[in-house]
Length: 222
Figure (cartoon, rainbow, N blue to C red):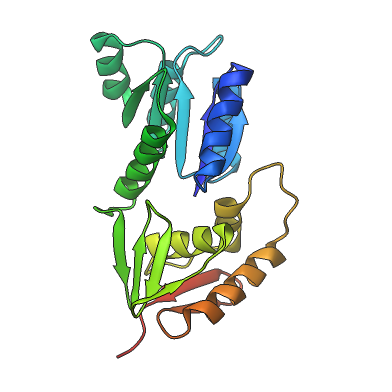
């Protein structure tokens, strides 16, 4: 899953980026609301994490403008402000959650996972698909009861496919799930990871290639 962090403090921004990367997210970092809007107009993100205290245009103005333009990406506000009025304002403007600094990394990661699940209408951290059982908190997976070992990128592609089950997922979207702007990957890398996933999943789930469009995951036929 890919996250856009909007934070003008370099130390805080890098700390959040590192925490999210360690939690298995692909992360891009920008320092202003203007840069965030530009990124969201050209790239696909599963979550935005925005500081309220941004220069020129603050995080509240950013979330207001995103919602007025029809952007439905989940938004988590990070801020040092802990007053009730600020929390209410952020939520009323369209933010999905609010986390006060300082915060603990496990809580940040849990809130991110929860927001992405909610956006994809998934109620629990444990998912069942075909003969697969996934725990999105522990990043663990079993196929017909047998534990599978997946790399971080293989997991990210599988999670993206399952969250979009029933729909074709483009190679570009899968690329966004595994790589940020700093990584020099090509779409051929997606093909390689999908091929490895197919081999590891066996018949527990079927990943089909839709020529010229992308991939679709289906439950096995019984």
